[in-house]
Picture 1 (cartoon, helix red, strand yellow):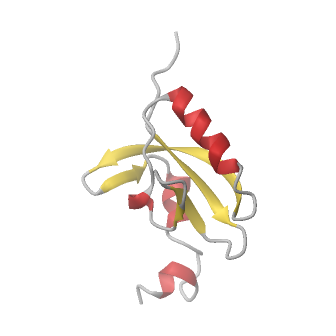
Picture 2: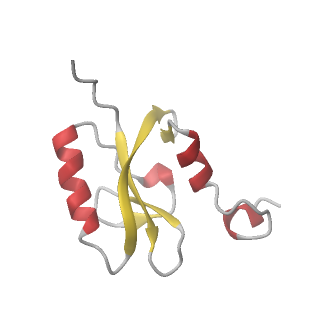
Length: 100
């Protein structure tokens, strides 16, 4: 029996900056997960992934990531995705530097 489809977002890394980015409904990329398009259908997810992968001049390594629908938009359902969105693991670079 097939597993039910879980909601997904498309994520990648910005080619020049290396930052984690998310594919939006208007075919753009955002560094904020809350701006990502949440995809609820498997066939639509595959089509959107193909569209995202066509933007090779802007991103690298696009893939589908599972999410949960949260009160403030999509939330990662796996530790890896939560870790990726928080930026580098040392506190003096990237997104984490802004929190200090």
